[in-house]
Picture 1 (spheres, helix red, strand yellow):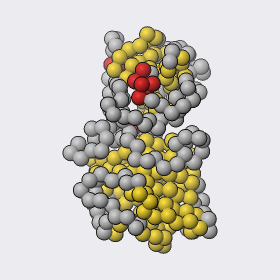
Picture 2: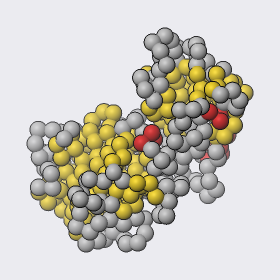
Picture 3: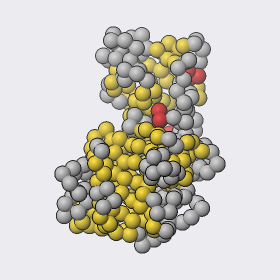
Picture 4: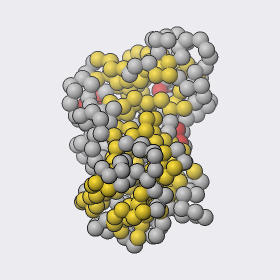
Length: 331
């Protein structure tokens, strides 16, 4: 896997990703870059009192990430990368420029040579490699290389992996993406990609789960804020439901990945205790391996970096023609 996180803030909750926590901020609709919502974690009391937290499933020593602020609080720390409670480095604004630090904002490594525009959304991309003398940091602002540091010390202590990133002191924040360097696709700069949420809109031909209440299956799972009053239940292993979903917007030409996700939980100790997520593409089913069903309601997801039918980059036509698949696991 190369694409690790893609956050749109259209869910009105932290249910969008199992590693996402939203602390003291608020959803906004007045300024958005993509979809219908952004998130405000503007400065209050302290720089990360209001914040977005993203915890990685596996700690990384090298990664790329993107965040898109509309504006930020001048002179404030607004990004920090960490291992547990230890801050390994961060970004602070200084006027319209960005400063990069190692440690808990202890050592200034460099300042961007390109300013961040004001009163508009900007795409800020960051490359990080944690190391003593072979560390690296690069920043792009709206596609332009603003800072490129190699052979620097980005490892202030014993920790050499990042397992979480925090964002704070940002008036509006949208479209966070994190890539690692593995695989053949999505292993580099996110390049300003936008995160589109495509809710399910119709039932497909295969409907083997049980809707509660009765009726259309898709109507039990089409909300972006998960509801406890309607759901689908699998009473046996290897049961499948198929759904149509919202088409991508017009004018979209480059698609970096398709993520299938569901909010799910294990209802008992009896099978099925796992589930599979997938897509029907060109008439064939492509399913994830068995994914553990959480003990309480939480997001489960599977990423298709490439079209599984062709092995090529996704096209809008292929995404629009695909069907989402939900299948109870084999155990």
